[in-house]
Amino acid sequence: MASSPYYLTTPIYYVNDRPHIGHAYTTLACDVLARFHRLDGRDVHFLTGTDEHGQKVEKSAMAADKNPQTFTDEVSQNFRKLAEDMNYSNDDFIRTTEERHRRAAQAIWKAIQDNGHIYLDSYAGWYSVRDEAFYAESELTKNEDGQKIAPTGAEVEWVEEPSYFFDLSKWQEPLLEFYEQNPDFIGPDSRRNEVVSFVKGGLKDLSISRTSFKWGIPVPDDTDHIMYVWLDALTNYLTAVGYPDTENPDYSKFWPADLHMVGKDIVRFHAVYWPAFLMAAGLPTPKRVYAHGWLLNKGEKMSKSLGNVVLPEDLVSQYGLDPVRYYLLREVPFGNDGYISHETMVARINSDLANDIGNLAQRSLSMVAKNCDGAVPTPGPFSEADESLLNAARDVLDSARDEFNKQAFHRGLEAIWNVVGDANRYVDAQAPWELRKTDPERMATVLYVLAETIRHLGILIQPIMPDAAAQMLDQLAIDEDARTFAHLGPNHALTAGSPLPKPAPVFPRYVDEDAAS
Ligand code: MSP
Image 1 (tube, rainbow, N blue to C red):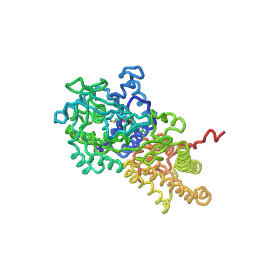
Image 2 (cartoon, helix red, strand yellow):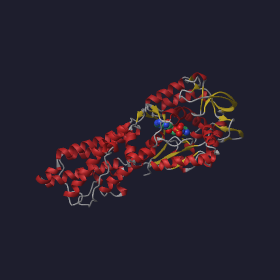
Image 3 (cartoon, rainbow, N blue to C red):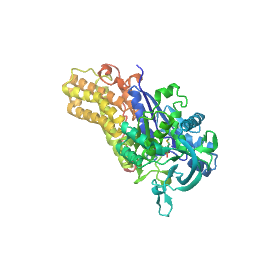
Image 4 (cartoon, rainbow, N blue to C red):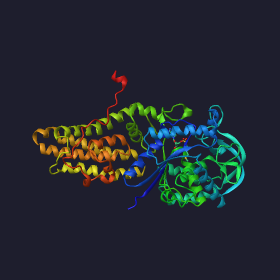
């Protein structure tokens, strides 16, 4: 049976910057979903990459005294490196300066134009280079220096130039109907409500070409113009599956995308402009856009301009990769803004990881090593308590899947950690160290139930902590090809008597150097 496709994307990153933990966060969420769906038997295509055109990147290149191509070649590498550092399992890494993308962007332009939705006029209004967005006078306020600023806080400048327009105003009703018919198109609900009221407020035609600079994709048949960077950038999601070749097997398999993951600042581009462009081009619309919140540092959105960025490589070298991956998706309810701090990081590492799951695995597997000849113990009949723990471990996939499908990572993890809690309570109640003296057969059963529970936990935490999970599963001598969600449940249970390697702790405690000295 062919497995069902699942296409998910991150926003492509502006290459004016070094990646910070806010960037890493969006892609991490996608990586966890990609790994989850692969383990769940789906045919996943996970895309990330870099957004390399536009005035913002051109200005950064000029500031670095480089030509934009050399500059983007270099900075794009930082994002490839981020993917390696964070252990992302992306299937593709797209750059909007690639030839495949120029073809796709020009093709969607032609399709929209051929359908009569583009006209030539001139733009006179406000533009923010930082946001690469046009703003109406009514949206602007003033900063302390009396300069006009966008709602995002970005400075704006007055632009007057010939421009092609997209007839966005005509898409108000079709969009509202589309949101109505596809209630899951935008998540979370708060963002959906925001988008719906924005569209109900009326839409203006959108300027989609620029003439005052050159760093972009030329408009087909009018090379005085380059395409507006957001129309260019959004099209990357189509490029990566082979568009404009709609006969391409990847296109037929993966388009429309299952999920565009974005930060809340760019929801309007993804949930309003993008479906309108696609409808205008006669192409199918994506199934879902999910907008997560901000990672805050000292109360403010982390960003280069505020000088408060946390670098992923610093966090990883201080706390370890898998703990950072776990922390980011467990600590902040996905969808909300949230703080990250050293204190909460250490608390999660020491309690959820070292104490809860780490200790469970270490004490159980050490007892197996010492008391069961280093092999999977042979269980006797299961008691009610045994069955209840095994069932909890077997059933948790359904709740984790429901939560992950809603992008509620924190709740999916909580469900898995409820099983960890059940298992720790089970060890305390069964006290296998006592049984060793009083009832060795019962001890073997208890240790078997624990090993089998740990096997389930190891399989389930792979999407979030791939390396730590692999170590746990190695300690149970589970074959590499027996680690998918299809291997959960009694049919693939551990075989009594199979030899096990010597256990070693997987989740060390974090000890503050100050406290230790
Ligand atoms: N290039 C556009 C996206 C084009 S998609 C067709 C862009 N790039 S970005 O580099 O500025 O941002 C990429 C992603 O990082 C966005 O989803 C943004 O919301 C996210 N984040 C940037 N700073 C963030 C935090 N401090 N916290 C969480 N996410 C943040 O926008």
